[in-house]
Image (tube, rainbow over all chains, first blue to last red; front, side, top):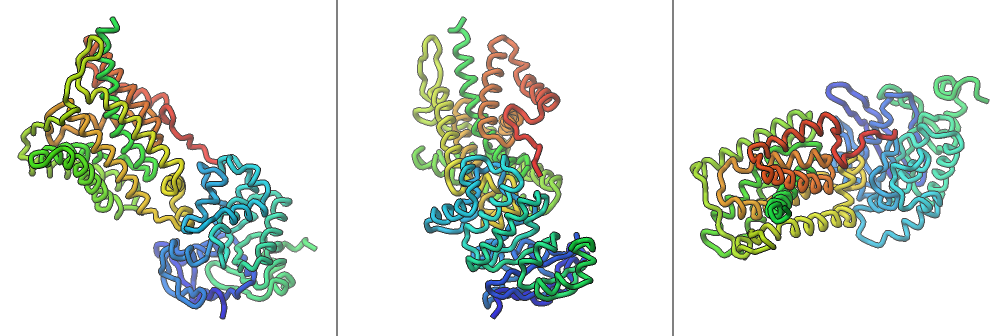
Length: 237
Length: 292
């Protein structure tokens, strides 16, 4: 049984249909990536899964039960956590508070999880008492990932984690994604950086203006001439 | 010289404390909803009436907590009825709803009280006289600043060091991401209204002990001044609102001491205009520049 199954999802914003009936399957333990141009509906798909935007129709099934129509709180508590686009750390909270708030719904001891995040991102430990607003873009991205890990997610959704970051930092972020994958977390990754995303993806979908285009393993799409032309750039070797 | 000024200073600090307790309600709600809750002054007035009616039939020990409870219930209901349904609406709609709620409350109070000024009950202890140096004043004058500072410090500790406080700070910058953390936005907003109303209820007990009569529109002036204090201190900032309130309270009374009583209100509103012209973010206002 797949961990997440999206069946014929439609989402519209005031009459404009942003998602026009897409179906996506995420198997447990996989890295699944959605690639596509700006406005293709990648972020909207993630927002629909996390309960931030209402569905027009379709169902989202997670771990055997339907979660579409539930509140964001309920969905987070089921173990679906999101690293939102643009990082969205709380700038007026310290690094440590940002991590604590990631575990807002938990009532047990969260110190081991904080230690775990600090182990993954030693830079955050150094800046534990700093306000998150003072961090660099890369550090904020690490914090946003760390914050999402605090709920011990089964499914981690990441919306454009490489956006606006230096190439070296992007490499680190993708390394971390693989580390989390090895820890057993299922990852749904939305990226414009198709090249990097496809390299690590077990399964990939191409979204084009609200509809599903190609689908295959990361490697298949990476080698597909149409994907190469549209998303990877011809000059790339 | 000092002996002549002392009563005015005492009155100023005391009035400042009362403004501060109201101002915190304005500033907290603004901090989270970016809304000027125009009905806050009327909630304050309602707290005065609650006390009038309750003290008619029960001792202060029972009436005071009940007043706080009723005021909190009123503030909570106000938010649920007038603001919550407009969560996705443009800010202008919410503001108009706030003005409407303010008039509704005022007119309800006209209806219930018949519009006559009600004598505020004499609260034992608070109304007693006390001699300080050459000045004679009521105990409430001394209690107000102390109680205000204690309450505000407690509130700051709550906001800085508790889980709900952390959630309030998070919600104040980002509704959506807060939801992704599992925070229930509506309960956090309700909590702010509850805290603001409770402080306004305490403020009303202190205020009306000094002014002795309650009418349906009596809250408008202290409400407005508390609002000016919140803007002066930097709206959204709790310490700012408190410091702003004390400064306004003291200045008003020093102006009275100088013999210009008629201008003391004008001073406060002139201050509002000056702040808006030259330092719109107030003393401690948040910088709006954001790193993207």
